[in-house]
Length: 211
Image 1 (tube, rainbow, N blue to C red):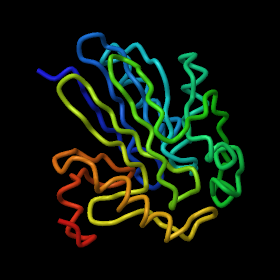
Image 2 (image 1 turned 45 degrees about the vertical axis):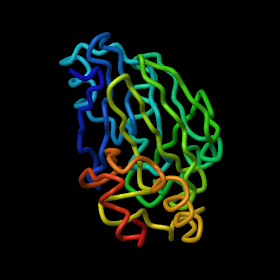
Image 3 (image 1 turned 90 degrees about the vertical axis):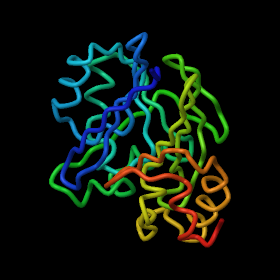
């Protein structure tokens, strides 16, 4: 049995995927993109008896950070994001929450660099900077002893990619991020995006005319 367990929660007004990733053996876990301050995150953590060790953001848009401060404070754990995204998560215009009914910001504790590897919960988490959706968007390649998975945020979706018409977005950058940094990963790698359904690297290659 794999030591890597992943639970998906679909939260918030635009149905954002929030992932609880944990070690089945130690019950240590991580939250990726706490999309809202919904109690569903706390309920799942308590139901699975998880010892939460950190919160990671793929990018700073309001629909991915809505519960960041709440759970950062509730569990006394650090909040991580890429160093280029620090401005986005703190700015209501850049994170788009100024256009919603309730503005939201987050305050990261630890800023990450491209290629950095964090060891946590018995996993290796590699940071892959993938600008394009926002300037500091990143994906997380999680490696356990038996399995690997990619948390892709809003960079790569099943059959699509994230919008580039928001502040700090760039079409040329997201194309390079996907083709040069993601589609070179293992064909069988499971991809867990920020919205909708999972995919694999192999399934996405034909859309980019790569074999």
